[in-house]
Amino acid sequence: MPYYCYSSGTGQDSKGPTHETIVRALCRRLAWNGDGTVAEPARRLFNRQRDADASFSIASTWEPLFKDLIASNNATVIFTIDALDECDSMGQYNRLLRFLGGLPKGPKGPYFLISSRPHVQVGDYFDSPIQFDVVTENANCDMRKFITNEINSKNNRTWEKSIFCKWPKW
Image 1 (tube, rainbow, N blue to C red):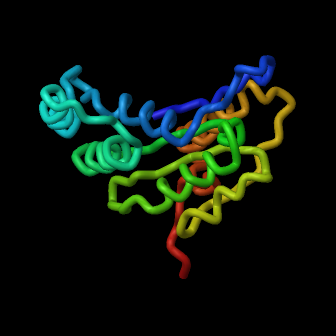
Image 2: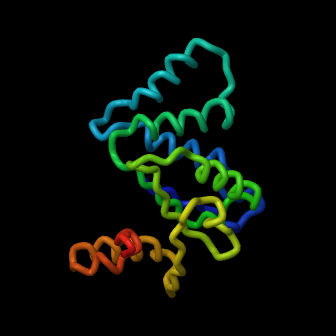
Image 3: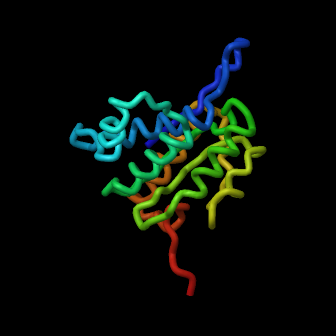
């Protein structure tokens, strides 16, 4: 599930996304099943909240919903978050990374592919992260090119060189 942290930086009102904005956007993506139906955790939240005059805070609503949506998902869950350094502030991307790094891990994820400029210490928040530098002249398509190359490596029998392939150490 892709998410691009966009901040134009061209106006005074222009701000990057916050922790809440990203979690809510990912919840929205997870709330829809592949067959077009609404995922059960999202349906339960709707039914609980539609008659109540409750606020939707990040800690009381969106983070628990996000966890429930991941836990109820039958497919492997992989998130791609591009340009994390474009968040509204250092506090926002650190809060997001703390939350994501603290999620329970299962055989089907969640897994994260996060891109950022080097000053964001993404690897500090995850157990056994695989980190790499992507250098490209065209930053507008660096993540797309990287993912495409990794998928193509599986098809071209060079999968063992991919960061997504972990061979046992003998």
